[in-house]
Picture 1 (cartoon, protein in one colour):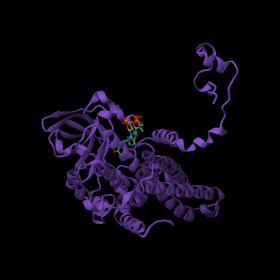
Picture 2 (cartoon, rainbow, N blue to C red):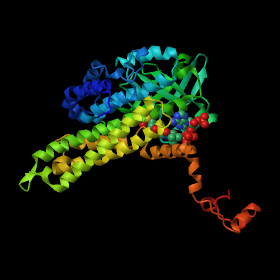
Picture 3 (tube, protein in one colour):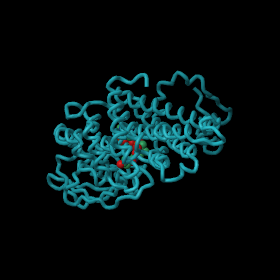
Length: 423
Ligand code: CAA
């Protein structure tokens, strides 16, 4: 990777070491048992990786999004579940980094950086998935506390995490402007993990329903000390987190490609290794090109976030869309290269395909990414105003006359078919 800094490479080497020594040997075991791999979490904590995205003044390494993505990619190359087990702590704690009070940052971030406190992000509800702004869990003020009484869905790290960034409605009449963020600790009365999901992939990390039964949250745990900012904080967090999911996808695709190449070199059919067969070569070449293209886009999106570029949110969505679709294609093709062996649970290759699927779904489905990208394109299009003279501005005799006279209702074409106004 030509443009990585020495610091980027240092994190890559640390994460790669953890992936090969601590993660890969136990990936199948925890995939099967669907238990949280505490030994892996300890290995990650010992290596300092939990501090990568936390600013230095709060006990972290101040590494930024690119370093985080590189670490997620390396861990996911060995196990996609461990990739998200790690990355979700960034998703859960980024609201504190970008929107927390000074006191909240000092109280939580150093322990998150040390790997002592694990974090989860509770935004989704049963009836508020892609339409996150329609969430309904209420938080009602009661003296110097807020009382949250409701349920959240799809909380990754649920049960393992000590701290939950919960988004709830403090003013239902104001829609998404009435949503606020709360830092809720697992040990507080009324907090329960209701259902642990049985998943297709990423099986070592729990995804749960969270039940909040009149949980009393002190005012000091209202994110940023202000109501009504929760949806913005949630969206800004997702903008920063989506390259992490994309990096998980790149790691999964690279890991599957690695195994496919090793197998194709060794497996002989028709008297030669299948790597000599043109059709297998074509698959491997296409897989490699997709992985490289995805990786460069992810790194560019991460760099855009770290540099504060206005287009960073769009690039993050593009990286998530492209890399996760690529991962699904590459891991499926890797299974194909393995043939019958690929379909069996005896070998890790089928797990890459199962793990890849969720990357197209969580932290915004790829349909939502397209929505984000298209909206951003239209918003950014002000810079293209000089191209206006190169597009059609036709008028039609009769139609425009009628419209101008206010008689359009009877005869003028409507909506997209309406002739543009004369300039
Ligand atoms: N940054 C800052 N503010 C933003 C923003 C952004 N990226 N996107 C929207 N906003 C603001 C808008 O400016 C607007 O503010 P005002 O009210 O002040 O005008 C407000 O938020 C509402 O914006 P929209 O009308 O554009 O919002 P919308 O209701 O149309 O929704 C959406 C937009 C992009 C579809 C959004 O709902 C979305 O991202 N949905 C997907 C949610 C998601 O990713 N969920 C996954 C959760 S985590 C998970 O998967 C589980 C896990 O644990 C890993």
